[in-house]
Image (cartoon, rainbow, N blue to C red):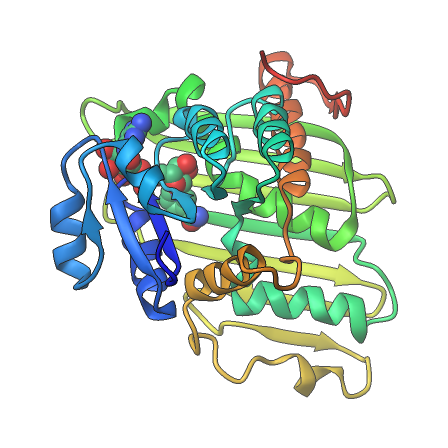
Amino acid sequence: MSTTYTVGLIGAGGIAEAHLPAWLAIGVDVVVFSIDGRGPELVSRHGGGRVVDTLDELLAACDAVDICTPTFTHLDLTRRAAAAGRHVLCEKPLAPTAADVLAMITACEDAGVQLYPAHVVRYFPAYRAVEQAVRDSLHTPPGLQRFYRGGSGPIAPWFYDSAMSGGMILDQMIHDIDFAQWISGDIVSAYATQNTAGSVERGDKTVVTQLVLTHGNGAIAHVTGVWARQGTTFRTEFEIAGDGWMLTHDSIATPYSFDGNQTGAGTSLVPTSEIAESPYLGEIAEIYAAFRGGAVPRVSAWDALSAIEVAVAAGKSLETAQPVLVDRERKVAS
Ligand SMILES: NC(=O)c1ccc[n+]([C@@H]2O[C@H](COP(=O)([O-])OP(=O)(O)OC[C@H]3O[C@@H](n4cnc5c(N)ncnc54)[C@H](O)[C@@H]3O)[C@@H](O)[C@H]2O)c1
């Protein structure tokens, strides 16, 4: 092993385009393996990284892996990395089922390596500011959280196969589910509705999903997820309200605003610059520091499991058209 730190980036698709430049900005060496042969294009586009031909070569060359492959591959790749003694950063959702996530956690714990989910929304300035405000300067917990996340639907067809991606709720709404739990604690029940139109083959598939989530403390989170036709601008919004205050965000209007009567809170909550640093860089830098023995990151694999348990309950609600209690009984996949 060289004295410099080497990360093995697995996959060369959409999200690898955000992860590779972050690793290069940190200054680590990066080796890339992808089964579609797109590694060379990726490294040449970003001006750094070295492509290897097999997963074994990647595992032999790195200190930690960064899994940027389709969700249904995460368990197997995590097991391979853990068996090789490599720390793991893995894209969200960690896996399509809670049992698979628990198997990933168990494999990493048994091997004595670290595992973190790439829940990047916790690193976006507006969302980070809410967490800090609720923790440090607002004196009442949120009673209601409303989230919107939508844009052009994914291009790769595997996203529309629930067994591979977990579908809209697990793939996309997991961001807001995780964030809602970060702010208001565990969700205990989920009610979901969904409308779909168009077809994946024609490229005009549309999915609109709504969740009503109840937290253990009685707070309500309402989450909307949209996959719309290609060309639709990606947009995120939230309104988070407590007693006498409301925090709002709209990614295509004002990035963040505060409305309330808490003296002094308004100015202190506004981030100095919404785009000061890539959230992917913030996320990867924090997790890299943990790999090197630094502070524990703000999000754990157990948080990811908890969010997936909520998403699974929401998926069952879609089937039954009834609210579903979140199952926290944890069984490892074989
Ligand atoms: N955090 C975010 O904001 C965000 C955004 C998009 C995607 N994601 C997540 O990232 C993951 C990947 O999504 P994507 O959009 O990059 O998908 P993608 O289909 O665009 O790319 C996947 C890449 O992985 C490669 N691959 C597939 N199986 C492999 C294997 N076994 N070994 C090596 N390479 C393999 C493919 O060839 C491709 O290069 C998914 O879990 C997705 O949910 C997260």
